[in-house]
Image 1 (tube, helix red, strand yellow):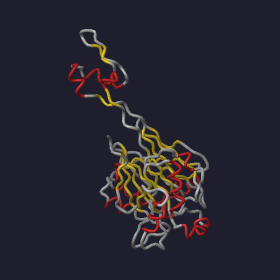
Image 2 (tube, helix red, strand yellow):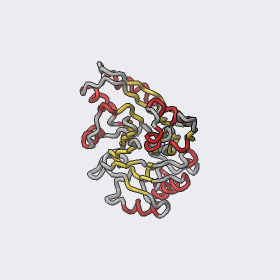
Image 3 (cartoon, rainbow, N blue to C red):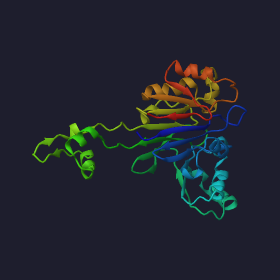
Image 4 (spheres, helix red, strand yellow):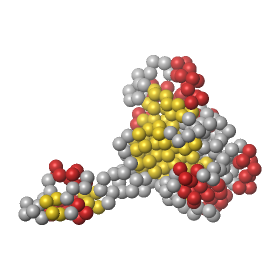
Length: 305
């Protein structure tokens, strides 16, 4: 099974603290890397995580609050200083487009690589990246400014070849792809070997949903049903539910409710308020509703299986 990992770079909210950096994650899938949000300090966190800057194919910005985008222009500039040649895709809310181009002119002139800006409409689901192994769509969220999450979905793969059966029947390598596509095998004696004996089922496609700053959306689960790993902001405990509602954030209990209703396999919570010196109460609250919950922490790498 190919790698599908989430690298947590920063998981705090509003401002960096001595405990946490602002939001940023790297999604690694089948050798490709995508940066999701780019808070202040992201460059340093990428270096600490030993992630090769040049392997990042795209940056997805959920919304235009500084703790999610202040690191972007600096990162793009550093890519140029490091001799990047590959194009970079930047997806961000449409409201950022004109300012982004002005900042590029001021700080990032003369780059030796292309930066492609793709505006996002945070009010609807949008396909923002697609290749033969992966698709990325937006998830409309509800925050104080236009905001969207991102759903990374692995595309279905072909069945696995049974090496013992291939060797037993002496099937040439040239026919393996045909068998993966569903063909039977006919021996020299005319015996038909059913395809079902030659392969084992393909791995189930995996997925990751990144739900950035948002108040609780009772219908969100419908867009992410069956997701392998859900990251959902959990800025507060339910004790501060009124504060969460005021600032359009979620409690740990609300994040866990989304995971439960979506029948997610695992939940990761983050975006902690700076009031917390210990996130255990948030974890306990989420686990009371959805037991398979973990805390985001800087340096954490989650394998999606």
